[in-house]
Image 1 (cartoon, rainbow, N blue to C red):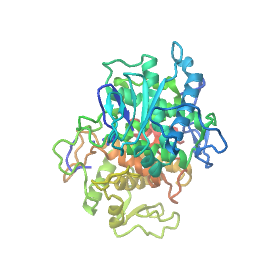
Image 2 (cartoon, helix red, strand yellow):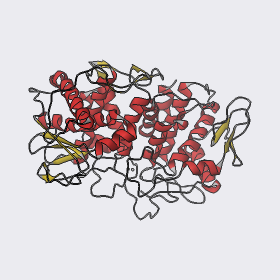
Image 3 (cartoon, rainbow, N blue to C red):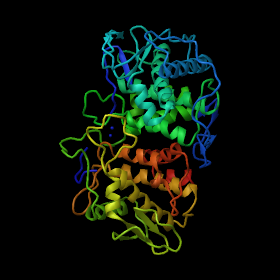
Image 4 (cartoon, one colour):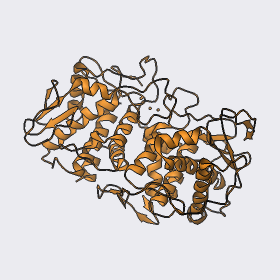
Amino acid sequence: MPKRPKTAVVSALLLTVLALTSCTSTVDGRAVSIYEDPFQVAGLPTTSGPSGPRSGVADSTLTAVGAVGDEYDRLALNAIDDIQSYWRAEYSKDFSGAFTPVPKFYSWDAQQSQDSQFCQQTTRHLVNAAYCRLDNSIGWDRGMLLPTMTKAFGKMSVVMVLAHEYGHAVQTMAELVTGRTPTIVKEQQADCFAGAFMRHVAEGGAKHFTINTADGLNKVLAATVAIRDADPSDPDSVHGSAFERVTAVQIGFTDGPKGCKAIDMNDITRRRKNLPQSYGNDADHGELPITQHNLAELAKAMNSIMPVPSAPAYDYRGAKLGCADASDTEPVTYCPATNTIGTDVPALAARAKANSADQTDFPTQIGGDYNAYIVFISRYTLAVQNNLHQRLSGAKTGLRASCLSGVITAKLASPTRTIANGDLALSPGDLDKAVSGLLTDGLAASDIQGNTVPSGFSRVDAFRAGVLGNQQTCESRYA
């Protein structure tokens, strides 16, 4: 979040080669609302049961070239088996022609010195999972990639990655893409297909796996955030920001494969609106320190973007306000009784700590300034709701706060808006930091008691609705 209008988005460990695609509504004909009931997830109940492989289920009989039969090969082949079963049943509902399963799979260990081949390239140091259009195959690194993802996000993240890769096979089979189709369209469509499959798992339709719609789905989305394009200026940034990738997954989860067919460059461009897509000459890559001065500037911006008759007062001495009608939600608290926002600036700055540049594993949370600023913004949106005499406690309050925070966030990207003493502007990666925080603890989607819904999916969707909509969108969704 730079001080001057500079141009804002997120990266993957994925490597792209010639014929290798690398990655890490309505459902059943009925409309599905993902916000009518704040305790539902795209029409499904919020569950907190198991997530991962089902016990007592025989392993798949599928085989892979180079597989050694360890736990990660079994995990991958069981996932492929369930994914193929899903598409065997679903494919003809939305696409013409017959479904033909992917005929060949490859497994390798990127740490090994042997020179095995996948998609006409060596698998030495190939830390990846991918679909190969040359021979219509899917391969995975069982030595580094799958264990690292499992450690960071659980086994269902591996299932998600393979569902994405199989999505590439489906889009090729259905002739949805050509050689001229932008890579980002192919990638986000595959993300969407993976989301459609994950709903199938959440509905209990998969033989080998199950997932709950609370922390289980949250971790899968967090994995999507981690494997993102961190720098849109990088020539290899072809997958989209975390905000865009999570959006694609949510479209698939909510609308099914039919919704994925609608993803094209026009759709992606529409969703990008005027959101910044380049860091430009910003040496700090959009990081703006959390200081009292910068928070005061942000307060001016919020009041300009979403003015209220009775603007809140700001206390930067701490977040322990001892409010009579609200709980302290450190590091930022809104007190309705006094219409005051209290901020513990050092604690909020600690929340903004960026990820280490030399981090080798997947980041389980995307750090940085906007992970903190979004919380400050969300407490202002509670003051907005208070001015409108809306209920300030409960699930819809928190989701409204997330949604309204999205509206303000999008407005910070406007190139025409100026603020006294300098401009505050959105920068690449800010949306991703907000999404990561919403998935991790959801504080920016909490009510005056600090309570939030358990579904990170719902918290992020509320934010996304605000970014892509307006204040009226939030009011109508969470009335």
